[in-house]
Image (tube, rainbow, N blue to C red; front, side, top):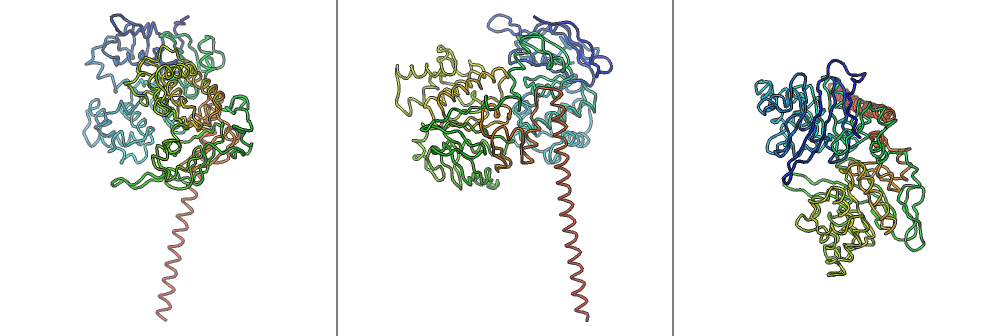
Length: 615
């Protein structure tokens, strides 16, 4: 049942509403008829507040917000009223909307790589916004653009001004997009999934930046997300959407502490909560047997008994020199083992080397030094012909199943392809195998004839899992398999993954930046930083009592779906960062003092030598 009463201004808000929305509806014309995406939405946004709109994919949260600035596709229409101050946005001509976009209201899009123009530098794109709306000269616009990049804490802002989007990391691209959105100090900022697929540390920095900017320019922020941890960290008020309607609204404390609508309660139950689960009951650790698998010891070392499914000792993986780009050592001296039937989580920031290890484990990258044994096969120096028999013993689930599945093949053929190539199974026998695999991943059998683009993200991820498990591998590498899924879909996929792991007993290297998910699935967690393994241990110890300073900062950066606890975690993280900065400053000061002391000693020594020469 929809709750459409007008909400009152929050206690923290001041002044009149920046945005007033009344009975806003959005429809799309598809296959000869109109379909409703959002229905009769009513809300306000006040200066200095963050209004979070939450819900799953297809709930209407993004399209209703894009309609405010006339950003719907050609087959979309909006009705109702949306006033930015005194200006009516619904029905406003595009020529007038162009003056509103960027100047008075701006959008931080979900995927900056597709929203930024790939043929222009990020500096040029910020300058373009400034000159279009403010009419300032080239030199002043460039100086302001660099100032904005510094404001969003872009490393080496003057250098990055000349960088193209593809030359920046995900976090840097997001910062560049925020800088462009804030170029003209807009009154309203729409942030559409601004931290999706970012590392937790980068996410924490982006959220901190948005909080600081909100206080600096007193703008109203509409935050669109399905990440309830981000909502707990940022939101003053929350709208919960389902099937195009607002089903519940309230302050952050009201929604998190006493949700009233069944869907809101279901949404909150689906969110993995770091450190909240009884790990011994939830981690995927199948019972040990004398012939198949053994429980890892409590000290975090590999289990004794059967040969491990993966064994790395002093592992190094180097990307060779290409042109002017020097060789880069992505993995440096890693020691890690995974027992048969064990799930080990591998966490760390982008660029830490975790995905590189996963790809080397399945033979997609060569190991340059050290030792890497996968299911008894030595991967160091192995030739393609040596790896062919191994292919049937290992599997990989990629981060984005939409791009890893062949778009020209029905999903039934994609799932059955490994069985045909490795075992020569075909005909009715192959069809039977495919149907069994579809049953295992809880997909209807009739979907075997559908193509990947006809499936949702969660369904495509299940197809990827079914394909990876088709040959019953002894080692499965899961590379960020749930990073872009809605929380309820993610919960379903993770539950399915647990059931399949218990049934098949495969060992798994689970790579993710979501530590709550890793904690739920893994018996041990390995933490990587700049290509090195900084800490390995049982999941409860890593989550509740991390030893390495980097692990401590990583754990503190994870947002949790509890506003009060999240506030404490934010304070803890800020204290850790301040301590790290103070330690770095002290080391730099000591180094400078040593260098100055050496210089004085050299001068004194030279004077003594000159004195001796005079005598």
